[in-house]
Length: 376
Ligand code: SIN
Ligand code: CO
Image (cartoon, rainbow, N blue to C red; front, side, top):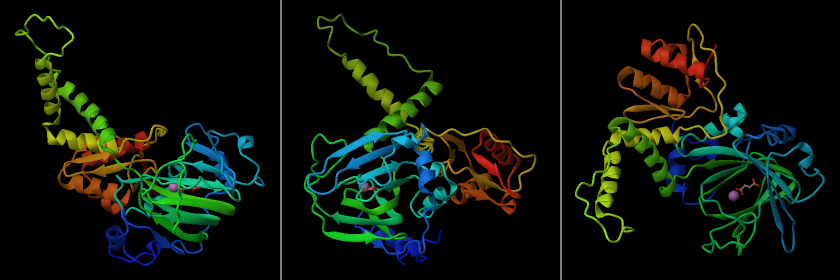
């Protein structure tokens, strides 16, 4: 991607300018970010997806006007559990649609001027007239693309993010909108984290939210420490605590000082190898979501071209290649080729002509796993 090239998607500014001026800072409304946009998924295709166990979906009902009362149910939803289209004020939200539809994955990939490690998923909402999820804020950045019909968005910078207690949804107690727009198909609104907003459907409405993954220190530390401790067991066989000098105790409930020191050293040891930390991070970032299963593929006899499955997550760092939660050390020509695959998500016949025998056998293995597919 050319980061300095102006994009219609961003209202004529470049990704570089967007990142330095708006990202994580301030909202951006782009009229006709996708000119003549047609919804990629029909209403019935979305309702079909919401029937599946492995698809995360929610139904939100709110009464419009006066005092609102919010209700929320979690999917899967049989078709008959979805309210009538003529009924007002309901929304069906379907998460991770990019995992199930190539067109949705391609739409999300238009935002790859932001690192893959940050891109999360595309959520699709379908709402009847008056439908919405109430005034709220999200903890991540979001691009809200109007896909079908109209939605009125009201947004505000407010600092008071207190919530209405005992609601099934996060609803702001004191929403103070400052800007108000009606979005048509193809229009898009970017919002940074914690920006107050409310979108209300005007007639039948579909909105796509391109959402981001926000690593949070506590979660990240837990994930990394689990992975690092597994690595430490593999290599050291796990050193055992020794306390030959332990004196007899009259306060048996007290934690021995020696054990504190042992614990500190154990953590220090697992963090000692910087490559182990890099590996743990890459494996964690590319771990497929819990509901993703790959069907075994058929490796072809000869590779002409290859492309990554839409659900595959591939990243790299200076020493490693990561794919779907696994890592490989890579250097030289092979690393260049694998990085190219990770960035482009495909390799042409010309690219493959430069591949070593080892690289080709790894690519064939990934085809078998269903992570990579052979092109024409
Ligand atoms: C929606 O699409 O209804 C809600 C999206 C959001 O407010 O984040
Ligand atoms: Co939101």
